[in-house]
Amino acid sequence: MTSTTHPIQDPHHGLHSEDGARRDEHSGRDPQPVIKAVDLAWLEFVKPDLERAETFARDFGFTVAARTPHALYLRATLPGPHCLVIRRGPASRFLGPAFLAADRSDLDRLAEATGRRVRPLREYGGGHVVDLLDPSGTPVRVVHGVTEHPALPGQRPLPLNTGGHATRINATQRAPREPARIERLGHVVLSTRSFRRTLDWYLHHLGMIVSDFLHLDGRRHQGPTMAFIRCDRGGEPADHHTLAIHLGPDTGYVHSAYQVADLDALAAGGAYLAERGYRRSWGIGRHIQGSQIFDYWRDPDRFLVEHFTDGDLFDNTLEPGWAAMSASGLAQWGPPATRDFLGATPSPALLRKVLTALREDNEIDPARLKALMKAMSS
Image (cartoon, rainbow, N blue to C red; front, side, top):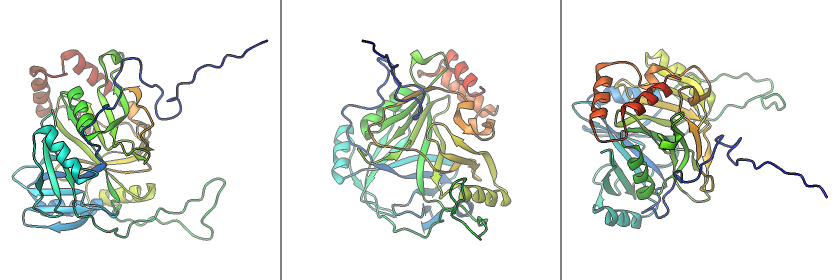
């Protein structure tokens, strides 16, 4: 009697990563989270010129939901709460993200676990909030009961003729040159000098789960240095990442991403932005982790913002993938990642951040810093 030996296949191969976790590596989830947030609600910024901010917002594809003398509230076309709050202030800065709780009782549970309190939101949208600080010092709000807007007219994906299937006969294709209407807020990316503590904080307090880990080449034994994190909605699929965190010499906002209808909306919307003098940071291309087609832009206050379409959706059964971090590993196709996108443009400000990081008690040391710099130039 003969037997055939079949090689064991890594379940990640050909799925979303070439490799899965090894024994004793981070599981990518907390066994007993306090709550399970269901989504990002909005992001908050401070900017000195609300008029300029509104002009860019409309050109980028947002709709103004409300405006006061001191704040601008922006929304997208899909139903839900507003997705951006821009407050008037003396200097541009990122305030922090707000996450949606599934139930009002989640706020009570979170407040009890953190020693905070639940309070009413006495501004546009209403609802209730618990205000927290993550280990990096970034303010994090968790909200419930905020007013949800009905849908607005959106852009319809254009019908495509493909090799074996024609949907458009005796008709031309003309993508309108107009703003790519934002459908929803997708994700925010944050940098931290204390990666592991910050990662574990979000997994424990908000019940988020990791989709993919990145590690420094040759230093996997030291643990991951970036995590793409999604909301745990059980069997309901969620974005590959609602939050991404990476180790770096800076702390705070890196970029935020907003979904549009399709590639034509993204590309034509980019042409519209270019005609109005805005600066593309990187794109157009398709990512590896998350698979999104992307296009990155700088707003007038130099915040990095992304149009994306066609991203991955995972339910809670998929375990984290692992891959080496590199600049070339950020995209399947597209132009090389720019120094502007990577935050690697030499400047006195960057040097000050590096020196500060090396003086503090955190996860940045000279060897890791050198490996990070090598990864972002590879």
